[in-house]
Amino acid sequence: MSNPLYTFPAACEQTLRALARYPERTAFSWPGGSITYRGATDMIGRLQSMFMQLGFAPGTRVAFLTANRADTWCAGVAAQLARFAITWLHPLGSLDDQLFQLEDSEAQMLVVDGVTFRDRGGELAARATGLKTVFTLGPADYGADLLQTIEAAGSATPRNFAGPDDIARSITPAARPENPRARCVITANMAASPMRSWPTSKFRTRRVI
Image 1 (tube, rainbow, N blue to C red):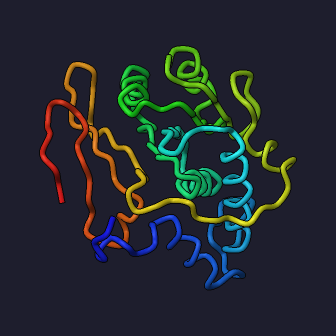
Image 2: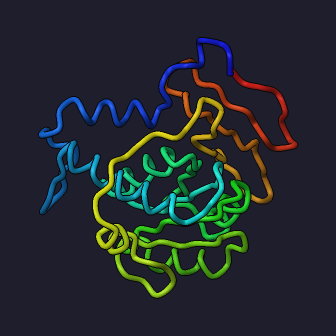
């Protein structure tokens, strides 16, 4: 993209820059634990390295079903750095709504919070036809434990591979099979310029700037 307005760092790269400024500060805390900016950066690097070794093409959609967790936030950043697009499943959505969101976003990978959504994650893994890989946070019999996988992989330095035209997020707002809405995609430089998204559904085709 030649327009200089769109040559700012991608949103995920700006996240790395923000984390690098104060490495010893606490980034996230929860009952019984916390993680610093440096620790979050390390986790992002491990996750990105693992994602890139899976062999998925740039633009692959990664769906998340999770409670408010530091590790899944890190996984979302890591996926974007690896040129994947993320979509967040509504945690209170019905099974049918979440299946529709997976189909609508064309998700090939699913990351499930195995503590909060263990049973629902199993239902999605069994019924979603487009999924090729399922990871869980915590052990479950329908996916690989993401935290164990990155622990075995060792440390890695995160690096941004996303360009300004790469899709960072795919959003299906309030969509149901019987009441479809336009799916919007947001490019990787969304934080560096006015939000730019493109509805991709046949129901609305205008460009939003």
